[in-house]
Length: 82
Image 1 (tube, rainbow, N blue to C red):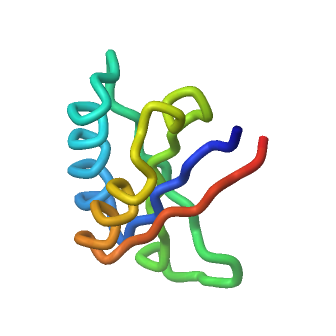
Image 2 (cartoon, rainbow, N blue to C red):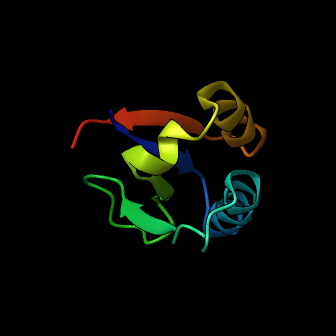
């Protein structure tokens, strides 16, 4: 099983998505958005924000539904093998 990473364009979108994911999946707490600077970029504004769901949390999720949620905020979903 793999982790799911929702990649979002800014912090506000990541915080909103984290709250919605926690509500949809009935998580005890919201996933904490993480900032990922883009390689080679000097501008602090050039960053993506990530909402990471563990493999266990991802197992309870509908991946297509999460992809649609991320896309509604101009983001996408990636899978990560731990």
